[in-house]
Amino acid sequence: VAPLSVLSPCPGLSVHAEGAVAVIRLSRPAKRNALNETMVSGLSRAVSSLPAEIRAVVIHGEGEHFCAGLDLGEVDGEPDLAAAIQHSLGWHRAFQDIQYGRVPVISVLHGAVVGGGFELAAATHIRVAERSAFFALPEGQRGIFLGGGGSVRIPRLIGTPLVQDMMLTGRSLSAEEARAAGACQYLVEDGAGLAFAMDLARKAAGIADMTRFAVIHALPRIAEADPHIGYLTEALMASTAQTTPEAKARVRDFLAKKAAKVARPG
Ligand code: 1HE
Image: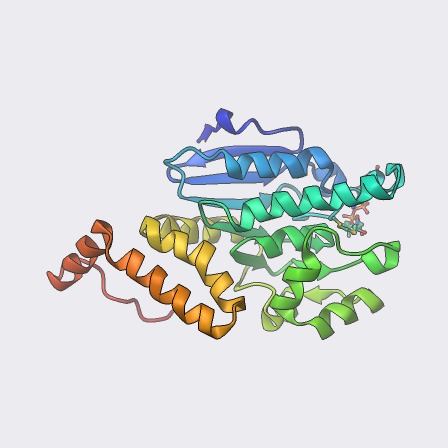
C-alpha cells in the first residue's frame, strides 16, 4: 500500500494507491470527520491531481462515522455574507471536481452521513452504504441550508418531498430507507463496505477510457438535457466511443470468444 505523496493530502485526509485505485480516507474521527475548508480543498486537490495510472477512487471515513458534515466551528467563525458565499462556492468547486473528474468515485458510507457528508456522498458516482449508515440533513435544526451542492444533487437522488421532510422535521433515514429512496446503490453488512467498494472500483477501473469519459461527463448532462439535444449528444458520444481502437479491439475480442459474457445478477 503506497501513500500517494503527489496528492499532497492535508490534515484530516489521507490518500494511498492500491493498484489502479486511489483510496481517500476522511481522517478526523475525533470530530466525526467534519469537513473544514482545508479538507474540502484537499479533496479537490486529491481528485484533480491523480496520476495517470489511477483509474478509480474510493472515499471512506475513519472511525464510527463517514462524515458529520460541515465543521460547525467554521460557521461560528464566519465573518460575513460575502465570505459565506465564497465558502459555499469552494464546496461547489471541490464536489464538481469529484463528480466531473477523470475517474469514477465510489463512497463507502457508515454511521453518520449527514449534512455536508451526504452532499459529498451525493457527488460520488456509486454509494455503498453499510447497515450502520444513517442519512440526515440537520441544516434545518442549525438554522442554515445546504451549501455543498446538495440542493441540486440530493433531490435528484431521493426527490424533493423527502428532502423537504428531512430538512423540516430532522428525519433521519436508516440505511435500508436510504437504499429504497435511491440515496445509495448498494447496502452491505457493517465492516464489508470498503472491500465491496474496492471490488466495484477495480471493475470500474477496467472500463475503456472513452466510455468512462462518456459515463462521467456525457450521461448526466444528456439525462438533464432537452431530449432533442440529448439524442444528438448521445449519437456524437456513441460514435466517438465506437470508433476508438480500444472499442474495436474489445468488440473483436468478444466476437472471437476471448471476452467475458454479460454476468447474470447475483
Ligand atoms: C463536530 C461536528 C460538526 C461532531 N462540526 N464538530 N452537521 C451536524 O449538524 C451534525 C452534528 N453532529 C452530530 O449530530 C453528532 O456529532 C454525530 C451524530 C455526527 C456523531 O455523534 P457522536 O455521539 O458519535 O459524537 P459527538 O460526541 O456528538 O461528537 C464528537 C466530537 O465531534 C464533539 O466534539 P468534542 O470536542 O466535544 O469532542 C462534537 O462537537 C464534534 N463534532 N460533528 C464540528 N459537524 C456546505 S454546507 C453543509 C451544511 C452542513 O453540513 S450542516 C450539518 C452539520
